[in-house]
Image (cartoon, rainbow over all chains, first blue to last red; front, side):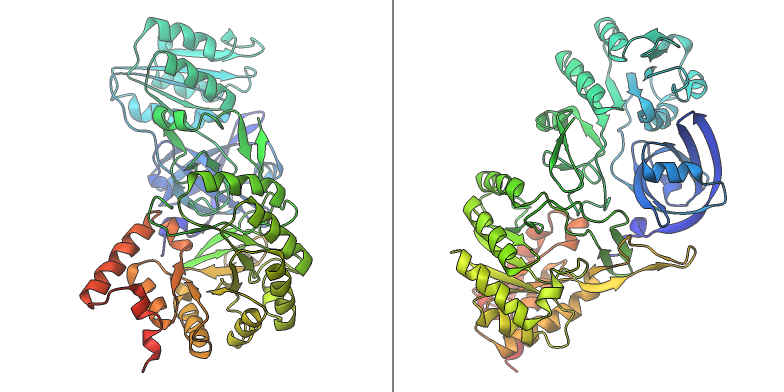
Length: 269
Length: 271
């Protein structure tokens, strides 16, 4: 089996942009990942340090962009790199969001906004109406606000912060509840912290609405072999990372409840 | 995988204590296969016993639990717990090429291997399978040691010790530097290992393993002397590979006017 996507390609970082105090966007030259679709991910090798899964923020013209929050050893090292530094890429991996027409709603938080922005750009011209709800802890951590304003009209772009420094002071699920009462969406897409995803899933289930959620798990091989990223009977790297409502129903015992640690034991959220 | 046509499932290896394994990269693509150094991540047999019990409820096929340890006592203790939890058979991992003081370091030493097999054999009443390493000069030596010590069957073989280096960064890619090569690249080597053992010990049941990805590969291993085959790496391409192999082997048998796979086991040896 020679899987071209899975071969590591080393290349130099083309550009680094600071998005927020904790998030940077890295632009890399890679023909294969430049063809990634919204929802897909790649594995980024930081030589001598680690290799981590990253959701694609944008792709095209032989370039791929990923946004990285500095949260641990590997991501801190990545943040300390400068453009021109050599890293390795394999991918793109996993499935992607399905294209939907009519009225769609995208809702997410944190770096989960990255694949949703990619998706929003793709859907903007194809949908009847595109609504977007973005949440973050603070104003500084609200990502891609300018880009999202460009994609959505002012009316359909809602922001929330936990500390009230921008937008509404609440969680994303508060405006979601209102939107779901007011409007009948043809599709809802989400990505972000799993407890948020779980809450959104419960709400869309109550309204019997279709949902696609991109999930995150500890990942190692990225190609469906090692079992590190199992949730229920699904491999997030291969069967996901995007799951629909029917699949989410099958994994309710674990969604927002527990995840596998490096030793394969279950860690509660 | 059981739904996809597998006749039995083999777990990843479990030991006494939890192990997190190595940091990434743990799996690297090679020209015709994969090189992995996962580092035996597992939650330890205590937690794993619950998984074994659960698997016995949902699966209709036998569950073979792969075990490892750093001594005969550890192998025996884990095997005993696995059997108690419902394992239908136990497979000894004496061939992992990338963790020190276990795996291949035991399997490559016939005396140590025999001790471990004897201790496990005394601890369980379930079939005992020993998975051998191909990283030896003569695989019939550890095969003989394992069988004499009480192994009921042999899995032949595990991965070949290997590595990758990236020319641009001048660094080895795997965090553990060395790993085990699997997939089509090792098929001819594994096939020869099966042939060697079947030629020397015709009555020892062999599970062929190494680069099998379609029915023709499976048939070739049986012709060399394997009674069954294990598939790992090919699952990355197609999780339903088992079904297509089953169908392909059936068609082959019909075409050759043979009644059962038993008729082809070791057939290549009868020159």
